Image (cartoon, rainbow, N blue to C red; front, side):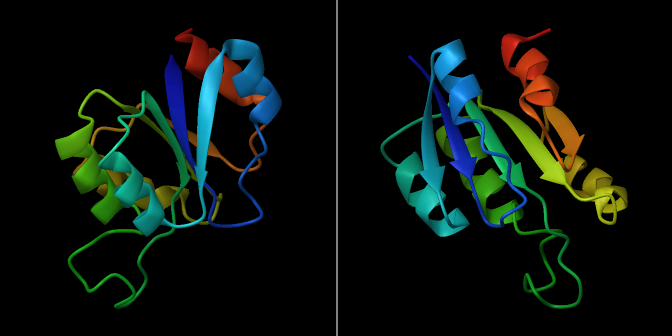
Length: 125
């Protein structure tokens, strides 16, 4: 069974339930990074789909680039083979390479994201 952690932290996150169902992927949805980290203790996802928010100022204690650093650090330990798809706004896409320098990212998509954008990634095309 293929599983995706869908971390939905804003209304911009696409609703991909129909696509996941069509591809036979089981989505596990989380409203916060913290809840997703807790779930890693019990489940190793094949995919992670999450939004990127750059850490302007001290929002992330200065040591982290974005909202995803702590989760991706846990993911590296708990599910190192999981493929990460990062969703980002046009305004913040310039900061994603800072995250990619620290963690492997499978794909980066600029919002808004549709099923047509995501499907080839999940199919490995």
